[in-house]
Structures are given as C-alpha cells and as structure tokens.
Length: 251
Image (cartoon, rainbow, N blue to C red; front, side, top):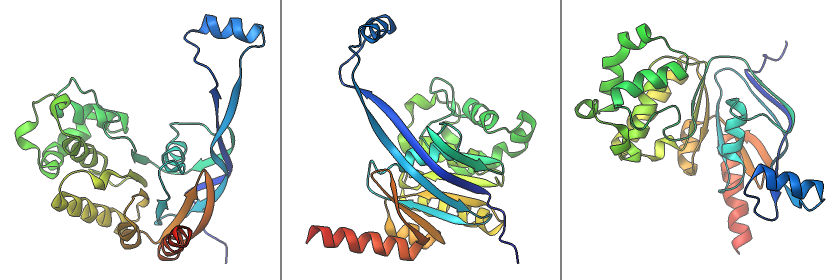
C-alpha cells in the first residue's frame, strides 16, 4: 500500500538572516562601506534544516518558546517568505491567519475590509456578497461594520480576520495564536468553526502557547527550539515531552 501524497512537505529548510553589526542608514552608506571592506555582519539562523510532511486532514500543532522559529515557519508555508535553502511544497488553497490585521487597510471600514481581505485570499466580490451576512454574524461586529478598523481592539480585528478566512472551506488553514484574542466564548466559537472545517477534511496548522489547546485540537505536533526541530509525533507525545524536559531543566 502506497503512502498518501503529502499536502505540505518541507525538505531541509533553512532560513538565514544577515545581521549587520553596526547601523547603516542608507544604500549609499552601505555601498561605500562595502567597497572599503568595512561591512561586518553575522548570520542568524531562524530555522535550520527542517524536514517534515503533513497529510490531508492532519491538524498539526507547532509548539516552542518565543523565538523558536514558529512564525517564520508559518510564513514559509504561506509563501510569504522564501527559504534560504531547502524546499517547501504546498498543494492546495491556503487561508493564512498569521499576523493580526494582515490583508487589512486600517483606514477603511470593517465592511470594506471584508471585501479587501477576501480578495487577498482569492475570493470574488460576488462570492463574498453572497456570504456577507454570515461573515458579519460570525464576527459579532454588526454594530461596527461602518467604523474604520484603526479604532478596533486587537480582539475585534482577530474576529473579523477569522470570520473572513473561514467563511469557506480552504484546503489548508494556518492559525497563529489567533484563538488567544477575544473573549473566552468567542475562542470557543472559533474552535467549533475549526472543528467543522477539520471534519470536512481541511488541513490545519496551529500555533498556540496553550499546551492543552494543542493536545485538544491537534492530532500531530512538532516542537521547535532555537530554530531546530527537536521532536515530531502525536500532539500528546510531543507536548508532554516538551513539558517534561522544560521542567527537568528548571530542577
């Protein structure tokens, strides 16, 4: 029996940034210093030699401390960034909820931003018109639709972004800490929407600082530490191992 084809596959992915040791304020200054051999830098590896695959219908949790490389990894999968080396394969329509407010114009109203954000995600104006009331109702922002979202709280922006991104069934949904915004009842509502998508076969990549949330929602997980893949396996196994090792380091 053949193994199923992965919907996402990363092979030997490395993301390297060049950090200059002194501030350079202009391209002209950089060019002069470079010609004189005065430019000094050091390489910072946000991710190092990462390889794993995700099958259709998987719900993958990504865990690790701040600075572990979780957000960089999501941006590579979402094609926001290109790896320094290695390959990222994605097969399917992708709805990324990576940065709060990404795809929004904060000077426009919430209603205008629904159409703007939807177009970024590849939805037509006609398609969103047919689902506009559903999006507004899910966001629970009916009274604020004609207000510029620069006046919104982070929780309100999160509600609007989640409502637009999940108004259809994407092949792949990327969720980065989005369930940490808003009140507890709305977080539960988002979880129910995610469960609906997952039951229909949507593949989910989920980042959360809540270990219990990852164990509850995800069937698989990977643990990143300082840009390196420490462990991959079932969500319960990976999360419990991470917690156990972090406790042992404190002792």
